[in-house]
Image 1 (cartoon, rainbow, N blue to C red):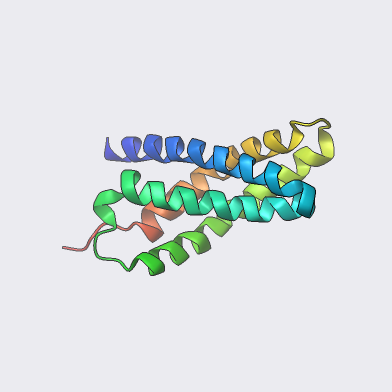
Image 2 (cartoon, rainbow, N blue to C red):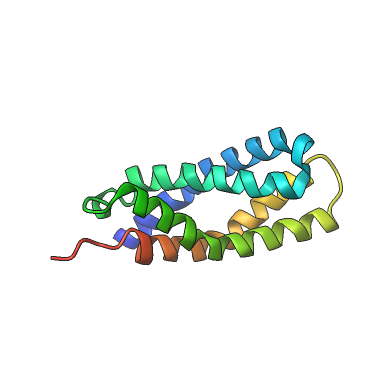
Length: 131
């Protein structure tokens, strides 16, 4: 049961991260282009989801860990999902035209990386405390 609750919470946090991702993407795209802005929007979203997952999804698991070490570990482990995420994003930009194509790419990428990111966060970053 706990696994299901954590996954649902992780998905809800991911939805909040999606909003951060899209807002930052559309704000920075005029300056950096759709691909460069996507890198920074992903970092912004990963930072937001780390903070929310730390506070809500895995709060019982992050008690005895340095915040900086945990944050950096989260960013590194999210790179696996980021590769899947960014790949889906690029494919959508190549196949779909229109103002909402980047947002659709972020959404598809987020869904594609969800399971990889959840497993990485649960078992590598927010490991249960050892007895």
